[in-house]
Amino acid sequence: EKLIHEAQFLMADSRKSEGEAQAAYEQSVADTNASVRALSEDILTKNKAKGRATKALLQTKADLADTEKELDGLSKYDVDLHAECDYLLKNFEVRQTGRGQEIEALQQAKQILSGAALN
Image 1: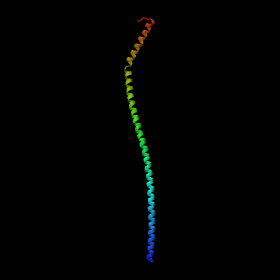
Image 2: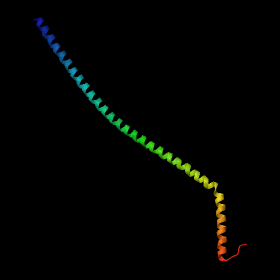
Image 3: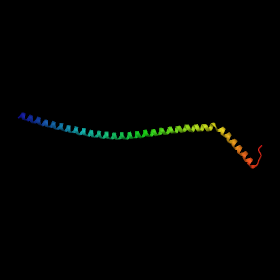
Image 4: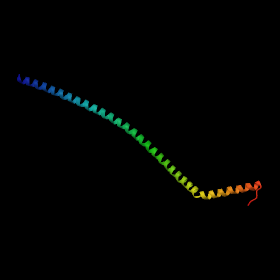
């Protein structure tokens, strides 16, 4: 009878231990599944953010290329404009003298046409 009682006690203890182990296993599986879901959502969120960042990077590179092209064009325009201004400044006196002579000649022609004699 003592042996039967011990066997029943051991079986009850074994069932209790097995139940606790089963509950712990189920909790572990549930925790793992929840962790996997959370990590999967995190990966999805990060992939979306990476996609947006990649798109923004490509747009920024395109904008940079356009800006550099525009700066090159402006630089060439600046060089051309500078050369043109240098030419005008260099020849200003010559042109001023030429205009003065032209004005004087026109005034003399006007006087001649008006009937005045040249001195």
